[in-house]
Length: 364
Image (tube, rainbow, N blue to C red):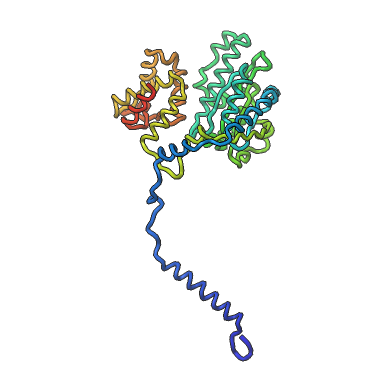
């Protein structure tokens, strides 16, 4: 305002701006809200979307094959790094599953290999450690003489705690200085492994003298899961940039599609794909469980009954073998455990009778 009591132009503009601001806020608060919901969106069926995606023609197949072949020249270097006590960590754009499996099947033929599929949503790490302990125990019995007292003193691994298993792995004595068990971990940053406790256990596993880790990562923030001690001392990583530009076909199969909704047919298809990737005996064990559930829909099957039937049909030789099959089923969420009316733990397949019948026909 000037000396004559009049508003100047700048003050008029400022007043107009303030007035418009509050008018806009008032109109926004009084406006009607939309009644549309996110759930009202008519998304495409998941099976239909996946079929459309599968028809997309892959590009640059020859170039990708040449790129994968070029990495084979690095296999001797990778093997030397493992023999020197390092872990291998593969990173880069594209699925590295085929590359790592090829390395394991060609360069690690003289060593035992245990595979962990980190892209699964749930993984029983203790069962993996038990499998490693059994492999090392077998090697101890063949590579050096184990006394009768040691055989008697050794408790079943499945009854030991995680701490006891890790202590056994760390203190295993084998005469062959070059012997080690290679643990291949596809997607060590996957949903089933990325929590802090699991990463700590994996780091302690990597420290064991007879264990070597070969892993892959895909998430840009994956290294944040490890502190300096874990990365440089426990895992002792050798980092290798190996972009493959290969599609994540297997890894992506276990992730729901954002633009689609699932249905019963897709559940059957996914379960069938998983079962067909397992051994024939594992498929037969699942079939026994499925047939029992179809004939007794309101009851689960006790583990002891399943073991008896599978033993009679020569599908398993021991309870340990059956437990390994059940671990596979539970990791892929094909089987769940529920309480029977008498309080006994029973196995249950979380699928409808119609879906089970289709799966049994498929695996037959």
